[in-house]
Amino acid sequence: MKQGFTLLEVLISLTIITVGVVGVFALVQQTISLLPVSEQRLAASYLVQEGMEIIRNLRDTNIIKGEAWNLGLTGCGAGCEADYLSSSLTAWGAGRYFLDNGTFYNYGSGSPTLYKRKITINSSVTDVLKITIEVSWQEKTRSHSIRTREDIYNWY
Image (cartoon, rainbow, N blue to C red; front, side, top):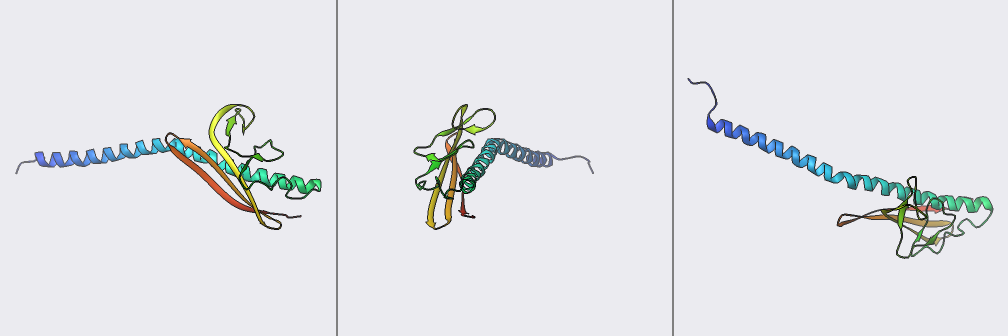
């Protein structure tokens, strides 16, 4: 009996190894291509959260000042925008891109970013505002967006 591998056994082994290595490379390539989208999605989710905090802050400021709780929070059915420095909401229109000043995203100064934020506020019930915040961006040829909806109340 001769010891060793036949040519057929070697070819089958090489085929199995090749399929495995090609699969690993394909997985690595897909992971690398999805990294920018994951980073962008994370930044957009923080911008959505910040938008909701801005609305809560405006409501709470109104209550502390003794003004109507929803002062400046109505009239955004078609959309508004605000950044962390805003003391009021402004009309959204076509929407502006955020600027990055190296510390914060804002509308005042810095280099342009990929992101737009639209804040929509509807009121169908007294003492309740229905807030929808959407952050959208363009990545290569694909459009992306993250949206959240929450109700805020007159807690005073």
